[in-house]
Image (cartoon, rainbow, N blue to C red; front, side, top):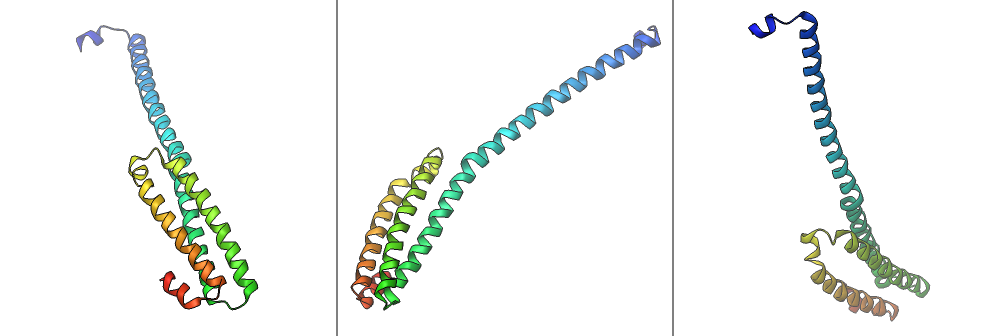
Length: 151
């Protein structure tokens, strides 16, 4: 401390300003780097992770709509409404496959999700065949068989 006692007040203030400036630069750099990392993480979350969830949720909604259309083909007696439901099922299948492929494209970077794609694709193929059988039985007005296959 005796070193600072021999320095003029102007130099003491200058040293204080220099130390404060260095400290503020260090704090600013640290803040900037953390904000940049947070921004990059948010961009990744919104552009990849949440997009995958949007596609997956859309596929889920389409499957629910497909189930409702299957029930229409089973429960309805009006041939025109049954044909409309069958057409809607065909559209739903295409829409589901588009949403599923979009999800796979975005989620392929997540190893846990990508590992399940093959098994889920096989389940989808089996489900799609069952849906086609139910729709065909509904068109043929074999409602009891269609209902048994539905459950």
